[in-house]
Length: 203
Image (cartoon, rainbow, N blue to C red; front, top):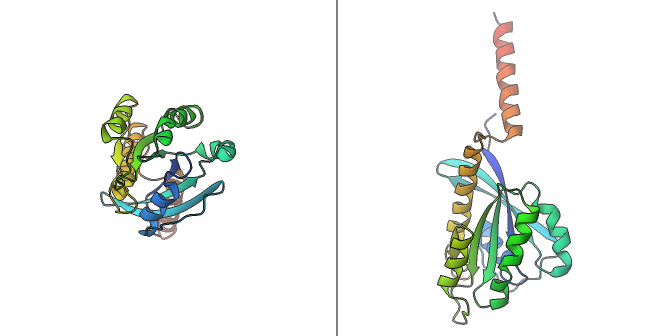
């Protein structure tokens, strides 16, 4: 039986409360923009199958709460994460200043092979307090891909997720993983064995 997708990439969206984590997930997965949100309580996730250079890949995207009281819960979800979008709000200097906290948290809890992408949200706003160069500088310092995004105007949303997916694929190839996940490899091997047995019995 043909597979609907070749691999599953687990992605976390991290950052302070109210920077737009739920918004970016909904904009990417549902292609919708909502003006108002109820703050995420703990963890939520969505899935989307994307065409990554001709190969279908399932992105499992975990939307995490930024509030202090939920951060201990969040750390349990680092396990198995292949990619992280670290989001700040260009109209909120505090969310930008907290990036070092989140980067330390990622270093302490995530796999050393995780790919982190930095994104500055609300780039459409006239109330910007964090300029583009500041975002670029911290991204360069930590060697992170960087985008400024707008959920409202749908700017660089898909580009951010697709860039992260490509970086994850590159890392998997460097580590010697084939495109197929382990479970999918087993299924393919079982199918091959079954076909071989049928061929032998027909001899």
